[in-house]
Length: 171
View 1 (cartoon, rainbow, N blue to C red):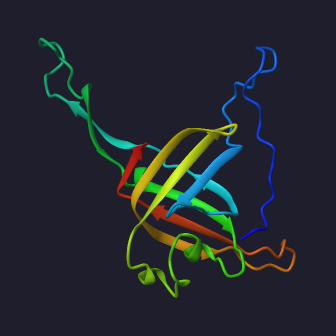
View 2 (view 1 turned 120 degrees about the vertical axis):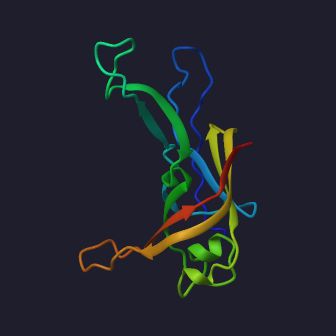
View 3 (view 1 turned 120 degrees about the horizontal axis):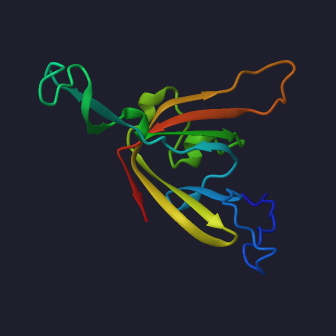
């Protein structure tokens, strides 16, 4: 693309009085097909959630272990569907709309035009050093749409997507 603006990275080293210790996202890259997807304006990682089922018993009060109706144990269950969802917002670029930036040959008429899943990498940097990378496999757009056009808006076309995935692995 060629029109990149470089920003000097934050310094995470130095004497103890000047060392930055707060975890920031000044260096976050979203990568698909080994290409950084530019113009990302917001990105939300999944909230990890799972079903927890309370177990109760019928032993009446006054008998050994009497706990009628009280929870005696919590049993962890499956991961919830929301745990497999990413959301991303992007400022659109002429000729490099979101579908193209995510590796597809053309923009979609509807989501059935997505005929294959993709792999997304979330790379977090500490200064210029990669700190952690998560790989999301089996990614499918479940929602894809533009913000409204408004007379008093910024006149910037932004697109929002919800992406569902099958697995998340720390690399």
